[in-house]
Image (cartoon, rainbow, N blue to C red; front, side):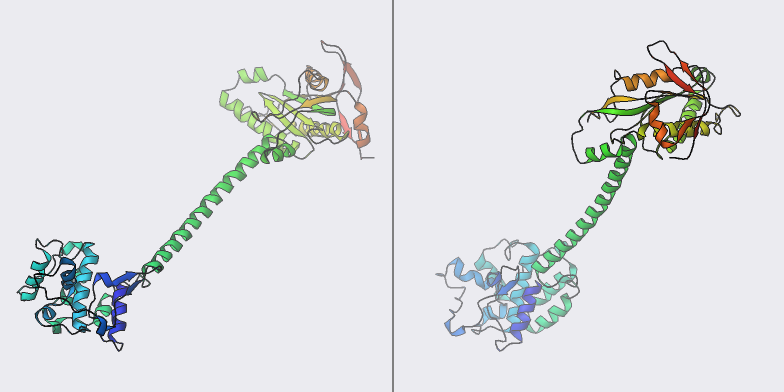
Length: 421
């Protein structure tokens, strides 16, 4: 509609002054979805409209008269038409736009009868039927004014443009530009939505990676994030440490389940804080028992022994200040078993847990070393000399402890960390 109004304003202000044959067949849509008005000029070459009363005229020849103003049906129309006649033709086109149907589609008459009734100049005039609710009331008013029976009552295209400007204020002037604007807005909204969803996804990804980093060694977690397969490895020398709470069964019998959970949460939070300060990894916790390993998956030479020794000593000192939350004044007694030797470890993709082979000496011996009735002792078996280069020395008397298996463990009541050599 706006393109037709703009085009007719230009024609009426040009040397042509009028179009003469404005109808929907002469309004063509180009590749940019702009309406172009065709069949302008070359009036000497035009064929005049046939008289509608000619009984020999065919339907295709008289149909263009549906867009001709009634005054031009009663009197011969100038070959170049008139501006007011163009306004009448625009009103019929507007009816087609609103209804999306041919002109006079609701009138139960053939083309000849319609033209005859329009020519009579009845009161009210014979015009297409347009329901009031089928379009904007302002558009309906403009349409009715443009097909007025009297030419002087019809508005000019300049007036029509000014009166419809409010209706098209949100549009750029052509359908293609409007579509592009809508697509740009949709694209902008979509980009904002994608950014929002991406931010939420990255936040969840960060949480997942943090959780994975807490469950697995950093090197293993990084490989899993890259989708790499983690193969089981054999390590020539690692140190594994078992620890557990003395008389835990008796304490559990005197406590509620919630009190036990709170107790273990506090204990393991304290232990993990100490473990994270060293080159070690907490494999798992089962009940009151905790398994810590150093020297895998990143080999650290012989430093693994002293790392776990330091961790054990720090935890033992921390226990002097840690009390059972629901039993004030009662302290926990821990015992530790540590062994240095070969081990195998793997992180199967189906289970995010470390799995040292329980049949290898390092794991089994560290578990057996822990199995003593003496609390607050660090029981070391294996390569004691690994601790010597790091300034750990034995100050108190050592004694051999013989569990119910082959081999003995050195039990140390107190270890002093001297300055590193």
